[in-house]
Length: 245
Ligand code: SAH
Image (tube, rainbow, N blue to C red):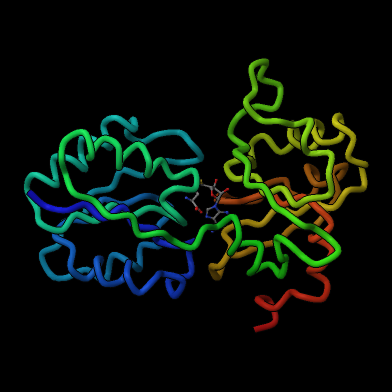
């Protein structure tokens, strides 16, 4: 029986892969990968490495999660080094926990290799720090996949009144609902926010706006994209660097 490495691939820029992730990728007998992982990473694999695509788009599954779990398990029965490669970090909306638990129940050894999450690195490439002295003392990373109007919403919208930074992942298709919900719980309509698309890659684009106009401004922006809300967005003026290189 082999060992499974639940591995973060980072947000897109291939140089944001960790040294540890790079090591297991070069040793892998099979790589089970996501849509978000930069495909250039697969070129690092040794000759004869097998590739299995189980990607999903904005929460819509190509394969249901239980089938992905089973694919990983079956590969662990056949191969020594199994790399389960996921965009960003495997435990940040990556369902790595479910995969680990499935393997645990079947006595398959695994390791978690954390990755650089898009939640922090994509804003950084846009020149937006998620915390900043005197501006934001904390940040939250929230799923934007759940509709804010859902009755039994798990998201504590009432807590978002503070001036802390909020990063929504998987939220582009709910942008309109998210911006109205934030205004409903008391944020001013001129509150700063940004949509960052394909961050850390050569296709990165950044739309800066307010809760009132962001929906209009971000029309047609391609995925993957995240939404960042808070006064830290204003720091981009001084801190944007990626576009200048
Ligand atoms: N585990 C991943 C997140 C998975 S959820 C991580 O830690 O980064 C997928 C969401 O991440 C996307 O819907 C998008 O909101 C965000 N995302 C991932 N890569 C991105 C990128 N390069 N640019 C912008 N957003 C990205």
